[in-house]
Length: 67
Image 1 (cartoon, rainbow, N blue to C red):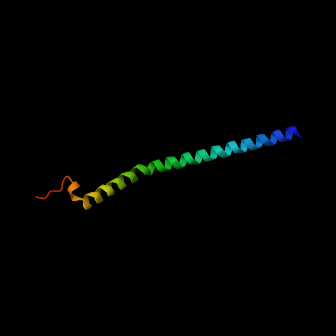
Image 2: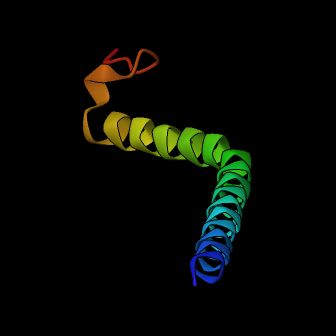
Image 3: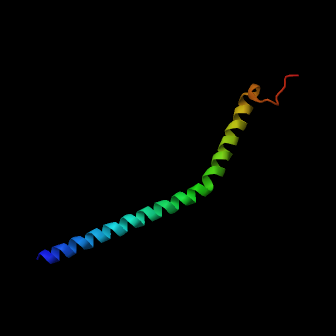
C-alpha cells in the first residue's frame, strides 16, 4: 500500500510540475508577443494625447504664435 501511495504522489507531483512549466512558458510567450506591439502602441497614444492637448490648448504649442 505504501509503494502505491508513493508512486501516486510522485505522479501528482510530476503532473503539477509540468502544468506549472507549461503555464510559465505560455505566460512568457504572451509577454514576448506583447512586448513587440506595446512600445509602438504607447508612442502612438502619447502622440495622439499631445496632439489633442495642443489642439485644445493652443498656448502649449511652441509653434503657435498670436502674431
